[in-house]
Length: 282
Image (cartoon, rainbow, N blue to C red; front, side, top):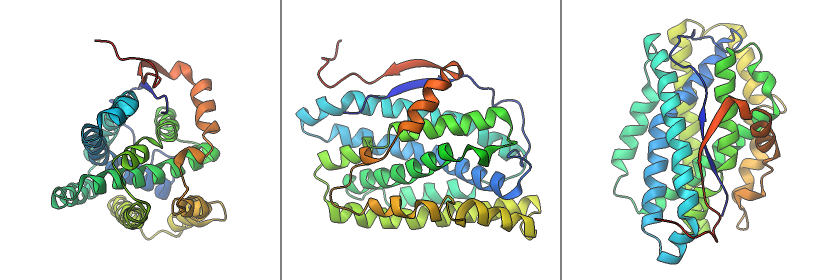
């Protein structure tokens, strides 16, 4: 069991911010805006999938993971709320949240799938976001010049994504999920997630009038496809998920733990998962 901490980030997201909040860089701002626009619907799906997965387990597995799942839900609910506030500002700026509409439709169409598929999809997305999170913690310069409160939001979110990276994976395997299907779902999620985020990024750039500017795509190439870019630099870690013996806890989470230690003044702790051996109290 992984011990998770539920935190309340001390941040103001009511005060408006500009569309190009990330160092006045059109591509970086549009890309992170697209990611945020995908989060509330996705995080509610993760919450629902993992909660149902826990409820469907044999009693002994439920006891082992109940505290961790509850804290996972607490973290994801906090992310959903804060990115909802972030996205409300984007909506006031005239950006249409196409990715949320598309994801909601996909979730409705797939509602009757085997529960293990939903948990596998959650585990796959959590691996993806944990890779992105670790990359951003290694490259905080990507947020240089960003609105300070938004830089705080993204790095805090990254640290918590790294922290709960194994919860859905463990739920999937406690439900009897197999390796072959886990890999198939991961390939599907990887494709859909990247296509949707890049399409939303293009829509954001189009709305802002920056889509056809050379400096926009120069920035996009550096961010995503440079030697240690977000996509190119994470390929090996992405591929690791295919190994039968893979487990998310194999990933190094030292940067996330260090960030949380060094920025403890930025949040208050509101809950934590209990160690597995600690009996629950009424």
